[in-house]
Amino acid sequence: MTNSPRRSRATEAFYGRRKGKTLKTPQAEALAALLPSLRLDLGVPAPASLASLWPVPVTRTRLEIGFGGGEHLLHRAQEAPDTGFIGVEPFINSMAKLLTAIDAEGLSNIRLHDDDATQVLDWLPDACLDHIDLLYPDPWPKKKHWKRRFVSTVNLDRFARVLKPGGVFCFASDIDTYVNWTLTRLAAHPQFAWRARKADDWQAPWSGWPGTRYEAKAIREGRTPCYLEFERLA
Picture 1 (spheres, rainbow, N blue to C red):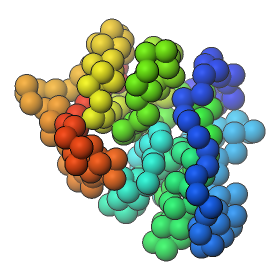
Picture 2 (cartoon, helix red, strand yellow):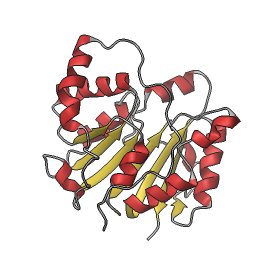
Picture 3 (cartoon, one colour):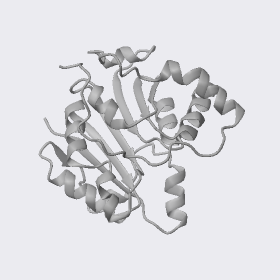
């Protein structure tokens, strides 16, 4: 198993803006006080045992890329205190919101990264994750921007390297073109298999799914959420 930092093979920015409205005082205080201690230090090699990243014992590890409002990440961290979570979100306002909630809930099983997720993927050791979530990512709807979609052959190679055999990649979106894009690329990747067993599996959210504000907006606007689950083959 390797634990040396890797140079990113992708230079595209997979996210848009970094900051929105001025932060509320509690959010600004949480950002300043908590992020330095919870942020992953990518300047040093990743630990051979990823469990050492958290101050509490963990038996599973899970990465969420672009956690947005943080509803899903917080819910999963609360329901699974023995799982170590890594949350990635470059948007400062979302990061501050999550940090405020982490402080209020007293959670100790979350680590964070506030830049591009490919940096974390290239830093992680081989076969260290049980689960990766990519939920309602930016669809980059214009064709000229499709190269910035996070699901790509290069990034699926990254997923395959860091996921344990039998590990799971979950993808959710309400954008048909991105769903089809994702299915096409996963079907072509030799190290992943779609876990669908029934024709309508894609319509059913996962067990314990809390919903997100992006999902609620999609439903209000008449779009249908899609939930895809893929297994990292041995």
